Amino acid sequence: MTDEAADPRVEAAAEAAEPAELAEPAGPVALGVVRTPTGHAGVDAHLARLADADHLAADGHVEVYEDVHRGLREALTALDAPPAPGPYENRS
Image 1 (tube, one colour):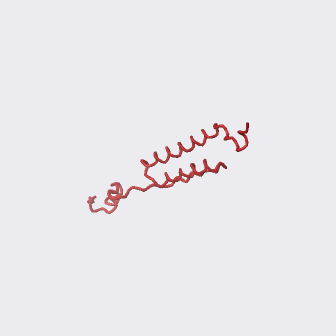
Image 2 (tube, one colour; image 1 turned 90 degrees about the vertical axis):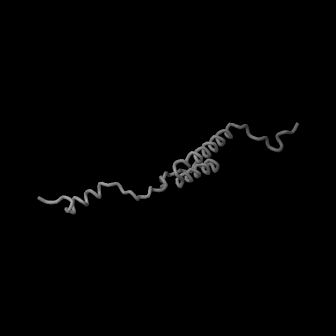
Image 3 (cartoon, helix red, strand yellow; image 1 turned 120 degrees about the vertical axis):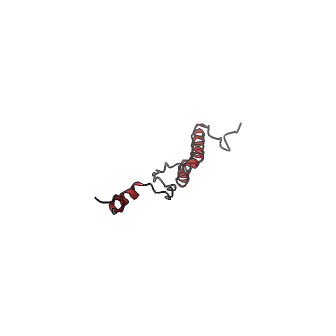
């Protein structure tokens, strides 16, 4: 009859089954999402801002996403605005 407590294989298996108590949680990791340029400088700048979220914890993503959403919404709204009159278009 063998003593299981003295068996190194049993001890190694027991240690492997226990969770690491002192393991540090992993920090934020960039997702590596490719952002294709749109050709519109304002839109591209807002999309580039999404990369800021890569370096934040999850609770910091909301602020970045809301900022980008606001900027993109303003860019779309500007497309619907009538063009500003040129300097010579207001002659009577």
